[in-house]
Amino acid sequence: MYVYLRVTVDGVPKEMSVKRSWEPSRWSGMANHAIGNKEDARAINEYPDVLQNRAYEARRKLIKGGGLSQPWR
Image (cartoon, rainbow, N blue to C red):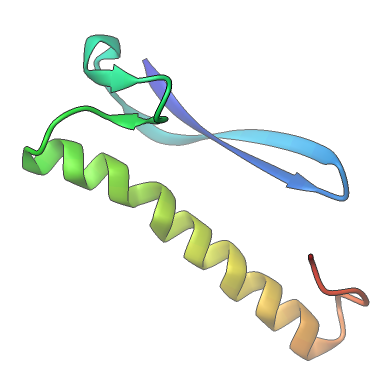
């Protein structure tokens, strides 16, 4: 199973592959994260946080540079 990231901007959702795969039997659909405490599970669970931080940084740069007129809510 491939892991995907969904981003919604102005009500328009977009999905993209994060180029990571995971065993479906080790995935919690309710919690939306990998099951387990091993290093591989921790790494795959941390990756969306890294991507989210990059998105916030890009947003900050757009606002600072005047490329985004209204801040996200």
